[in-house]
Length: 158
Image (cartoon, rainbow, N blue to C red; front, side, top):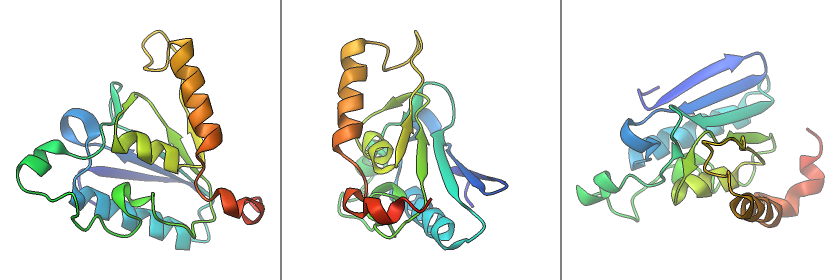
């Protein structure tokens, strides 16, 4: 795997840490690698749950790498299997993915967090969700926007 992703297997748990300079922004190469990771997770019968988080304490992910875009990476680039960030378009992933949102999630980073089955966002004085109105919005977003909501009965086999 690249320097951008750190994978740790802990029994039946796959921990994925996004580690990109500045704000854990995702370029096409990293997105492609993330897609491969999620496909391998889907196909590995020994893995039961994946947890994705960002390195550092300030950013979970700032989404698309705008520096790469400024250098010519097109918005319609091949982001690999699973679409942007490797998770947003894998509709046959029948294992839970947890987003441990340890900092700000902007743009595609927020999209990645919402593509997970469960969000874990600690509410602390330094948290981006420390204001009640923001936490309420996040709760509403999580309740209303679910990955594979139409597949909920089959997903209950976890």
